[in-house]
Amino acid sequence: MKTIDLRSDTVTRPTPAMRKAMAEAVVGDDVYGEDPTVRRLEETAAEMTGHEAALFVTSGTQGNLLSLMCHCRRGEAVILGNQSHIFNYEGGGMAVLGGILPLPAEDAGGLPETSSVLRWVRPANVHFAPAKLLCLENTHNREGGNAAAPAPFRKLVTAAKDQGLAVHLDGARIFNAAVAWEVDVKTYTGMVDSVQFCLSKGLGAPVGSLVCGRKSFIEEARHWRKVVGGGMRQSGVLAAAGLVALKENLSRLSEDHENASVLAERLEESEHLFVEPCPKRTNMVYFEIRKESLTAEELARRCRLKGVLFNPVSSKRVRLVTHLDVSRSDVREAARIILEEAADR
Ligand code: TLP
Image 1 (cartoon, rainbow, N blue to C red):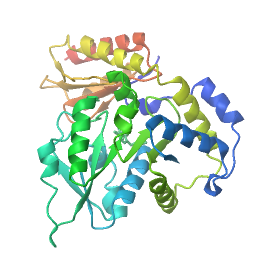
Image 2 (tube, rainbow, N blue to C red):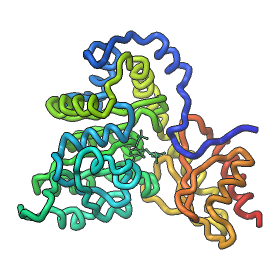
Image 3 (cartoon, rainbow, N blue to C red):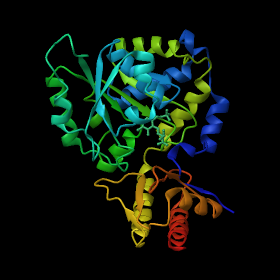
């Protein structure tokens, strides 16, 4: 039985071209700054995002953590969406390791409300942890994978900067946003102080993320990366796959988006499922189960037996993610199985 894995775009296996590049990578000790493949990846990432420098890190979570630790000292605060990945799914790393206070703002729909952000910008007062940074997420994972449009994104960044805040972008899937809006990725990345993007999601590389920013910022991030045990040695083996991902897999992201739309349309046929509308869909589909007797856990269990994997995100809510290893016929087949299992009593 074929498995159609819609749990996440993190599940992709490296392509033959990636494996070849990994096998042939010229490497050195990157803690000494001597790995030419890592350097090439970092230079490529900086150039693509419109920043001075970049740092290859182990994961999106590590990239976000280092960025926050560079922007804020202990006792300072970060404003971020209450639905954001950093707030919900990164183990509170900023508080655990950085002594940084998260200040949540309403971000239903994907971008935090400007008023909800600005209420945390308060006058200096002994009682307050001063807010130094705004974090944005695009595309927005928990908000349906929605890609924020360039104009409201710019407006919010400008409003934050006018208040003296720095802005960090959790751009785990920022290339999906750029592809969805048909703009250069710099439209988003060029206006923020720092950005983290993932190679290991829709771009299909096995491991790694890049943090991009000013030279001095990246030097400090390099220090914090070592502190958290992320100093890697011959990591050119991994960077080589990342370079292939950036060269070969950007233009095909639109296929994932189309497949997600096909999946959404098919699932809308069911009276038992409510497919959450998404203003600018990328590679995710969220739906709610409207049938009283069926939980997301039970639907996932039944579909797993038929070879379709996905993650429940709550007792009635499900997320499906399309990616490199899922074809158009796979999504049609997955939709068929989900519809069938949802209809079954
Ligand atoms: N997201 C994962 C899970 O952790 C939920 C997924 O399967 O989607 N920012 C965003 C917006 C993310 O979606 C993720 C991963 C991260 C950061 C963290 O990246 P990693 O997993 O590389 O630490």
